[in-house]
Image: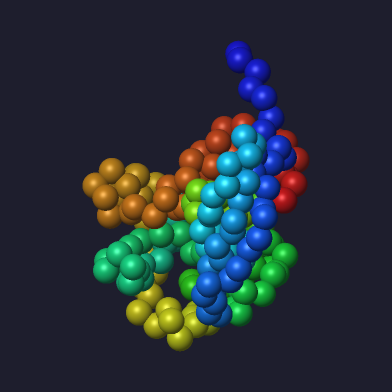
Length: 197
């Protein structure tokens, strides 16, 4: 097996200056003047959004998904419950996961386990996500935000979910990547301690 160098903390660029060009309650967009390792100058546009939580509600062989209209795509999409706190607030991952699960599905989890991290679009956004597996689920009332009024929810078997990915009904990159984390979690960490957040 090849040993790969660790590049996670090595800065390949220096920020010379930064300016905010747009902001709303969900995100900011900034433009940074940067200097590369070879000394050349450039610019970088960055979408800053708070970290999000994605929750995989699992009951036996069934997965709970939500479907909503995704305005930038002009399409309705099925995906796992996920989101950020209002007004770009920074909440602890577990609290945010519980909030998103309750808000979008009405479900409450007796067990919530962190199974991995995801970077949304690291070439253009600072946003990162935490993925949680929710089990021992109890149904309750949804608490959706106004923007989620068109949301639907439903249970699907794993086979149905995988077919939805294959046929292009599920195209949300975070949901597909989170499912891969679930499969790895089930294969390698059944008796291991919970991964740190």
